[in-house]
Length: 168
Image (cartoon, rainbow, N blue to C red):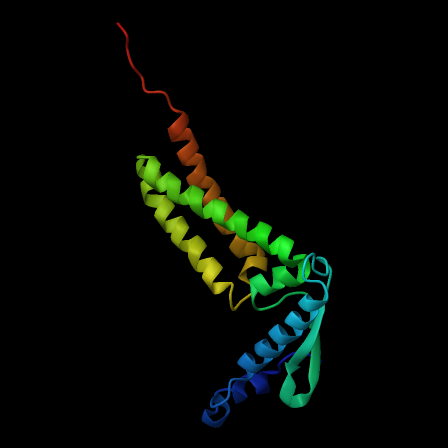
């Protein structure tokens, strides 16, 4: 059926099974298959609708086709090519720089508290995305996007406020 059964999952609790990480091998096979396909279209990728087929359970010879990869950056490279990955990295860098600038330039209490927290969450999500599909996870990206918007909104409002100077 392409799905791990409860027995498969419980079998991983056995110390002999834990000596070898099947999940790691499946992800390695997934990445190798992705790079083989990336080599076919390295500049522009295969498009957003592309589905990759790789061995999910190599010990059983079972192939699986999926629309995501466990490494978000390899996923973007596969789907959008080098052009898309460079654009995406620029986008992430621009968000990170704006959060850093907001923290350093705006003295508002809200920004001083929220900016480092959101920047840390943002960096953590990028780091975790090297081994999971977190960048494609809608709840994760939605919450993080809203928090980034709140911080940058506070920063913009604070920057646009004109000091109240009475010239009397």
